[in-house]
Length: 459
View 1: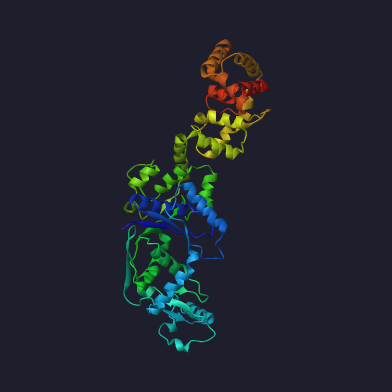
View 2: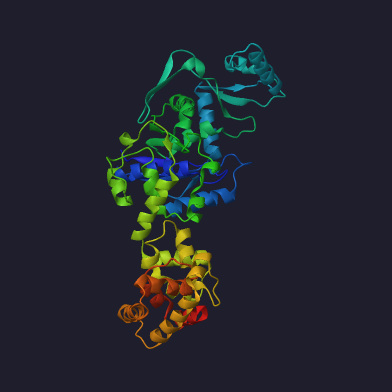
């Protein structure tokens, strides 16, 4: 058997971080077992589904490197097949046409409320002669739910789950306008796509019992189910915007690398000993569903940020330079070259791409610079006089680590200052702040002409 998993988002909004983790688990499980990972866009809710949401989902998955092995399937294109299966169930006696009117349904619900009992549909059309059907009512098609015993479903995460069949009602599989319901369409699609493992959030667990009715009505083999716990905020409440970013593209805009986010999501609910840093290759080699826990995970943005800093230090400098230039709107080749030259030093101090871009901003500025409060305190009259001497000395020096180092040491010795007391006013003059990579690297990245222009302007 070839393992085939799927991620099946509804394009009614953003790709939530919980959905991204579900997609990642499906992807890794398929790769670990040498199988295939598929994508199905469940766009049957035509009023709420949008092309913009579809594109955000596809972009988010592409950014995370979670790529399907086949072209995405759009559920809306399969309506004829969903109808065909519903008709087969009708012919097999596993479903029936229900002619209950909206008014009758409302009256039944109101009666249940008045009697303080849960509403469970008992359609008189389940066993009634269709020849008695009213001519003015377009029927829905309902499945014949089992009435006795219980339904038991093995789950790879939750263990054996079950429900009394009396709790299941005759759900609609085809609406009166001929459109399929979600719970019916999902089963038909999973069967036709030969999905072997349905790995999804445990908020779908109650849906599983209803979907199993469709499998059994058609005599189809059940896939293996695995319902993974949801992601909560640090306070244990359902994850929402008040906790921080919740959509994949928000995390991208806030400066997180996809490999860091994937590593973090992998460790939310799944573990391998004490390992924290697990790259994609290691994740594929190690991931299996039996290590997924049953407890809900809590989102820890501080831990994600720490992990992101690790991956930034490992990231290719050219890649980071391109991202920083895009964030800063830099198209000038000279300014891009400055950022590239200093990237090794800049990325050691940043935790996110937003921080990295901000720390590189001084390399893109034109004179005159503005100085923050700390930089201003460094530019005393005495320091400005020293800057004039430094500029003159650097004018004739080689712009190398050795040449710059010689000038700085000579200045410190001549003025009785420590090396840091020489470097800080220069740093303020070059950047407008008091933080940067080592001063010699910063000078070299700016280049002699620009560096001396900035020092003299500050002096």
